[in-house]
Image (cartoon, rainbow, N blue to C red; front, side, top):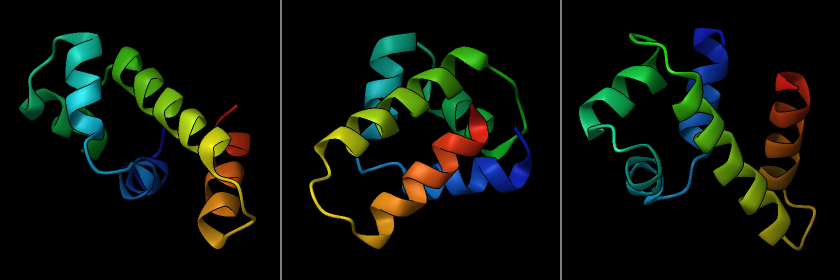
Length: 78
């Protein structure tokens, strides 16, 4: 992922996402932050973050601007 895509991913993740990623991967918050800023590389962390966005996408009921942003980002990443 490019630094721009990682930035968009970080901005779209809901509050508490780092905790969910930590539980799923057992990586430290520091390492998770480093991956999400592009300083380190972990496909597992990125996959979990994208799964969180997928869950958010399913939970979103309206066609809000945030919903459209998430949908576009996921489409580009796949």
